[in-house]
Image (tube, rainbow, N blue to C red; front, side, top):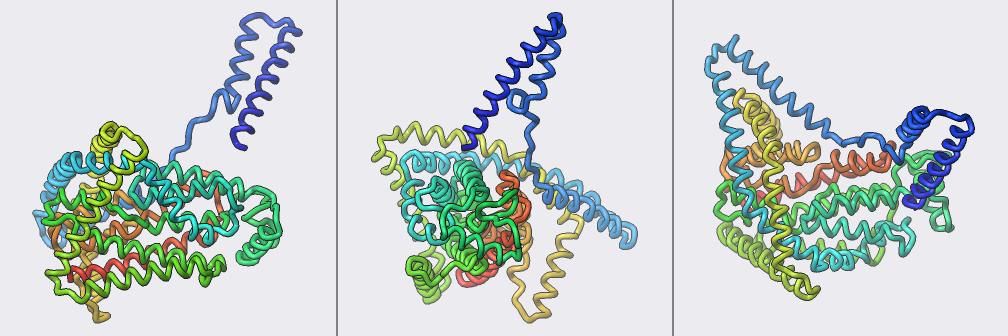
Length: 499
């Protein structure tokens, strides 16, 4: 529909251009006047000379990065003037050199492992693994998106996006997600065509206390998020993933004895985050969670997760870590072999597909160098000034006053940063592993925090901004509640496995 509208607009511009030139000839304009007039005409055309693109910027991370330096400077100045600490500023400057070197070494070390896994993912992508996951997810997701007409193309885009996210294919997931939002926005603006849609629209209008426009269909402006949009984005922000490749890669680079020992804990934590997101959003949208399909799917998954947790809780700590690492490595090897066999079944040139994906891995490793340098230098200065210790000690004091265990407090900066910025949380995770050790409780917990949720505010800004949504309704509280559930689950699971 959108493409047809653009084509019609272009035809209209061509006709206007032709008529405009005929009028110039009738006025007997000289050559240079015709050229200048045509230039002005074309320059004002939005299709032939489109405006400059609008880039989405992470404003929150910008303020956080500035705050790192400003707060660090103020605290360091206080320590110098009032406490006579002559070493604080040299320590801060030394930290900038050390952390920038560390960031480069980490990025360089990521190249090989990242190339390996992106190569494997490319084989799976071309082998039809995303389509397979989309078919598996179809029964449950059709119940979670009741307003979408049966057989509508947006269903395929949503399934493909969620499947790509579950496999860690960010490069494939984002375009599919933006495409799904465009199609959902077309439904959001479309007039109502059935009594079922009318009932859903009426219920939605009553929910938000509106008396006029319904965000589901028949809206005059289409700047209000529909129920389907919100459910789709909450599923994205909950961070459901089956293969946390980047976290395992960072752990390997930071010297973890068994980089995959957090694999099972991350799967469990991200499950609870996604489950909470689905339940909270369904309550907001009055979706029947007692529906047979939803009940069997979610109930079966909860029973399986409960069985896994119970089984591990019966083991001694050493045996639990051994079994968890063994199962994780077996699952990852099964993934590699399955992706290769899927490529062979689809008659894909597996070797060439791997090389293509591996090239993307090299480019990704190089591309993250400036981002990693920026965030690690900011965190390094913040820590060297003593501000990070003050923050962690303050949170630890509050937890102790409430009678809680404070072992998890050192990893909390990762959890607090994750809803705001992915790169910021990644920097906090690397900093925690650097300060405490990759195999420490804090180092492992920071990795579980990183994998249990996603960048809620960034996802909402990009996806809603791409289709001009201004009224996000209950998207933010649902996303943040899912994040909170993921954080609580990550702490509990870390104590179970590594405490």
